[in-house]
Length: 126
Image 1 (tube, rainbow, N blue to C red):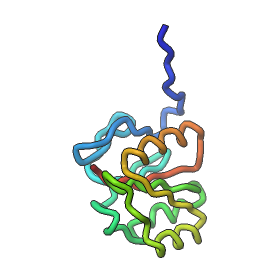
Image 2 (cartoon, rainbow, N blue to C red):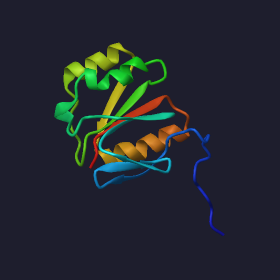
Image 3 (cartoon, rainbow, N blue to C red):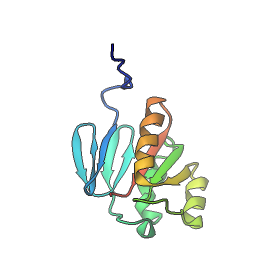
Image 4 (cartoon, rainbow, N blue to C red):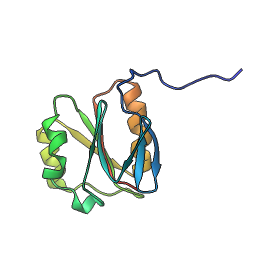
């Protein structure tokens, strides 16, 4: 017998199915480049490196602070530190940011989504 451990999620949830080759496969759809990912939507994110990240580039996250408590930052192939001013701006909006490599952020996002947590992800394409 094979056990199916696929989480049962509502159909409208955005689940990461794969990443690499410069983009992501999210809920059956290919997204080229970096993305901001919410449980119910995906937004193209014009950031190719954490060094390009600004408060303005994270405005959709700040604007959604009521629905997002945790932002996972997938900074590319390796862990990239979050600039202190960005961390402080997000914190003042009520959003905690956790940095990791993009693969780790993708896996963590799916786990937290399955737990129905208030999570979003800023994912730099690899």
